Amino acid sequence: MILEKDWKNIQRIFKLAQKASIHASIATVDQYGQPNITPIGTVFLNDNQTAYFFDTFTERLGENLSQNSKACIQAVNSGKLFWLSSLIQGNFSDYPGVRLYVEIGDLRPATEQEKLAVEQRVKPLQWTKGSQLIWSEFTHVRDIKINDFRWIKYPRMMENLI
Image (cartoon, rainbow, N blue to C red; front, side, top):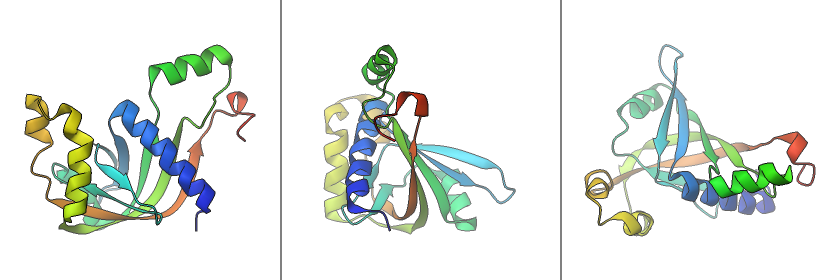
């Protein structure tokens, strides 16, 4: 079980990371033991230490999950200002990212609340042609059970956080 204070921090860091890079990466392994990383822009962390994501265009991810439901989700704050100020100061003011060790469930229909959450996330770009092509018709999600986490660290620049 993740401590509540850690979970709140994970949610905050994850949100900053997704805002900066517009996605999180989900790593799975195929039937031959080969790794595959899938960028997903629709991962949502719940307050009860679970999560879900909309699974629409992820053919390989679905195949891999049918063999092994375990995955690692990584979210890194790739914001240029965050990195530049950290490098200039020689110190990170916050964790640059987090890895979540998870089990991912089967595809299920999205609830109305989940559909509203994804609509809010893509709303600023919904006027673009690309947004309409890739971020519409979200109908199914996969639930995520979070088993553990690990902060992304650069110890020499994180003495204030470690």
